[in-house]
Amino acid sequence: MAEPKTTIILLMLFALLIPLRIFAEYYQLVVYGSTTCISSFLEPGAAELERETGIRIRTVGVGTGQGFFGLIKGMTEVSAASEPLEEAIESAKK
Image (tube, rainbow, N blue to C red):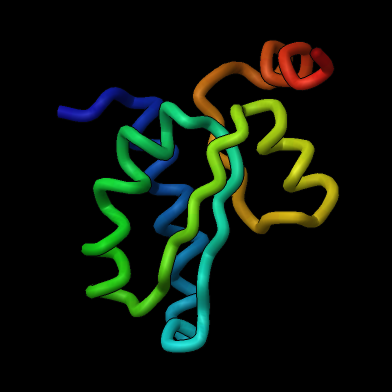
């Protein structure tokens, strides 16, 4: 059974993807952030997600903090996080 944190992340990602299904054949979802999230469930599930929804996922592993900054700057629509927000902000400042 998945950890509660992982389940919540997957549910949030799924909730985001439901409205995108309309644009699926023309849509690529870019996800910035945690290399842990990317290697643990985004990359392994990318082919199945594309097969089921038509949405392609492109991942950019820059770390949780830089992923948040990418989201704030409008460089991505989704940021993957594997650490608390406070820690992510501090690590991104370095």
